[in-house]
Image 1 (cartoon, rainbow, N blue to C red):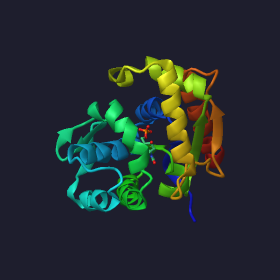
Image 2 (cartoon, protein in one colour):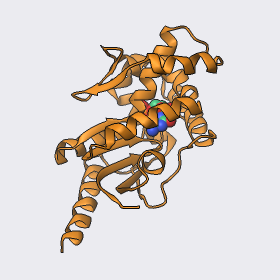
Image 3 (cartoon, rainbow, N blue to C red):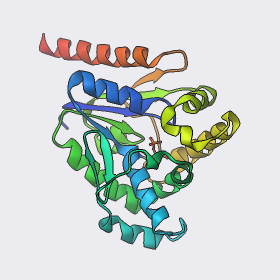
Amino acid sequence: MKNNDDIITIDGPVGVGKSTVAKIISEKLGYTYLDTGAMYRAFSLKVIREKIPIEDVQKIVTLLPKTKIYFSENKVFMDGEDVSNIIRTREVEEIVSYISAIPEVRKYMVELQKEISSKGKVVMEGRDCGTVISPNAKYKFYLDASIEERAKRRLLDKKYQNQNLTLEEIKKTIERRDHIDKTRKDSPLRIPEDAVVINTDKLTIEEVTEKIIKYITEKKNIQNL
Ligand code: DC
């Protein structure tokens, strides 16, 4: 299969800084930024609003074609409403790992994500970007960090401050979500075989971003020799 030269994938667990890094890289390269997790979050919000219990998988699945999720200027819209902030609330966070583990939900979102990325020049981040959505992407990265470090970062992240959680509560939530993301049957979180793994424990966002840009630039230069 031909490698896709203008797709960059960044995978990794919850709270590792993927979205911040992906956003900066997309701006630097003039690429489109695709936050795949935001799509699962937006759909989870719809499930909450429709008051469907998470056990009622059949009803959740029938909601899929009735939900319109799209991006515009780095904001995520659900049924015409900008839900970029509201999808970061505790209520959404509590159910999103369950909702995103439903195979029909994944299939639906992956189709949409493939369609968005087929236009090229995309930096996408999530859990299955380099393994399922775009296995032929040329530049794949996997960010990792300890639970302690990820919880500390989440606590300081303005996007999540509406949750009013303590460090211990955040740690527990991260552990629970890691477990669900890594053990689900359908496309669990794993390191893509050909990904560059970056442990970000002792790195700043700028350092991580620089490492990624440097790697891509060097690889592109070698290719052009
Ligand atoms: O990256 P995030 O925290 O916004 O992701 C929200 C949830 O969506 C997370 O619990 C796992 C799921 N997810 C996924 O299953 N596949 C993706 N490509 C992105 C996110």
